[in-house]
Length: 493
Image (cartoon, rainbow, N blue to C red; front, side, top):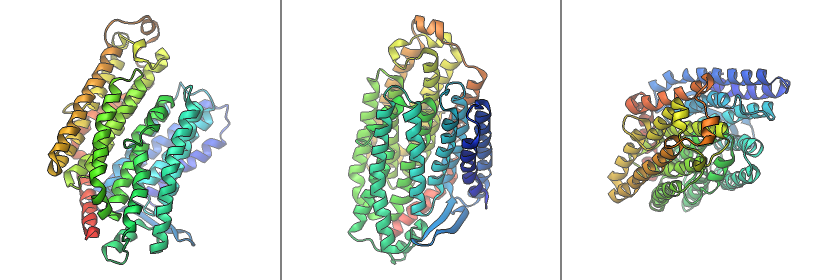
């Protein structure tokens, strides 16, 4: 068992152990899950060195038989594409545990156990190299999020949870059908082997390639979510508890983006190019539509949710430029969005827990009552709108530069999303944190407590670090993406 296996197994063992703890020992449960999640994060940092040495190759690879027939294997590995996404998952999980420390009082044991199961599912998707194993982890991640929204959400939580489940399952069924078809054609679920067979001409998909691409693409596009398949997202975010919103926005949406890069580009290169035109059109439509709808949202969480539709449009747009710089920007923007939008949901959650309202009109003058909370929110909002020296600027700039190499008109249209994001985000900041202090804010809002500093300060540090010194993160991403583009070009011949 290598280090990656341990990072994957530890939260799974923690999930089972948490379920065995006495349900009335809430402090023990919280501390145990925090310990497991922090230990997993610390161990995941040990993955960095080996990946940086050879970022285009799989490190910590394990390839063992799981089921004899059909030939399903436990095949996992990590490279420059998946490294930071795994660490993003392990970094945010203990933060979400701390965020929920005071506010989750119902079914505490189940809540924290599900946080560990969600961690297992997301890490598994990022490291699985067997398509069936990928699908298993994909479905594992769906289950805890469904219950997190459905049990601990707000008033319309059942509606939001069922809608999330139905949308995701619809895409999953299509993806499973495509995986089974590929196995019947090739005799293997192994993704690297499938890509190699295509490169050597031992596997030809013919006219089926486009249908297979669409099956995978729809599943991933729902998860991103790409306009117009986004309608489940605002409901899920609006009703989810804070930790659920953070993990959904920061990690789970990246499962779809990751699948586009890991599976669609190298395995279906001709179909990817053939469909790129309308996909880029939908991405640009999502960038502009998400921003415009965010402008008129009266609810803080729904505003941030629609901002995700807009920001993740940049990710899809960068992927389907098929350029090195555009793809690098897309992957980097996945990480940026995970940090800045995760922080926004945490801060909105802290405001909600103080005022018991998500409506913008019920606030005003929060900055006077809670200056440190206000300062953190302003920094996060500026990162979200792409202010230079903060993280989102780097990703959006690289994506726009890659798009400009393909179609400059697309660049102009996508840049409108950057302008609009400044409008809706700064309007929210002005209305919530400045102006006359409402009576509700005056009597209920206090500043950060130490536990809340522990959740927010690391995220603010990451926003600045990723904006000022992107060279800490981009080299392995670039090397891995270069290999993806080589495979995509080779298999397209």
